[in-house]
Length: 154
Image 1 (cartoon, rainbow, N blue to C red):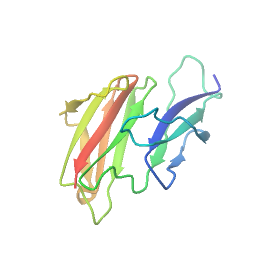
Image 2: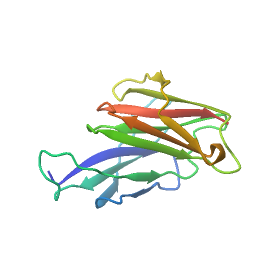
Image 3: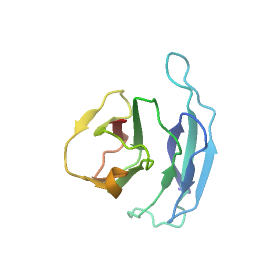
Image 4: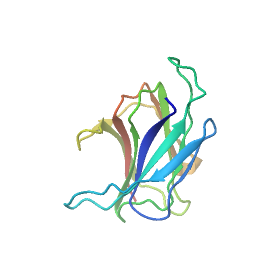
C-alpha cells in the first residue's frame, strides 16, 4: 500500500490547511456533492498519507493536522467532527476558538459514519486550556468508521 486517505469536508472558504509532521501528504479536492435535499453544499478533500516506507503488518504513528478557519455552522450553534475511517490506537481532536468568541456550553458526541445519529460522551478524556479557548479530546482506542464530534453554543 502506497497511501491511505481520510476524507475531510468544509462548508465554505477559505480552504482548510492540512499538514503532517510524520509523513508526506497529498490533498485533492473532490467533486462529490449531495444529490439534493436540505444538506449544505460541502467542499470535500481527500487527504492521503504516503506510507510506503512504513513496515508491513506493524503499527506506526501518523500525525495529521487540519486547520479550518471561520468554520462555524450557524450564528447560534456550531459543531466540528473528526471522522476516523481507519483503525487506530488513539486520536486527539483539538478545537481552538477565537479569543473574542468562546463557547458558552459544549458537549462531545460520537457515532457511526453510516448513520446520522450520535451518542453523548461523558468520560473525562477532555482538557480545557487557555482560559476556555481550546478543547483537546484524547480518544483512546477509537472505533473504526466512527465520527467524534464537539457541538457548542455561543
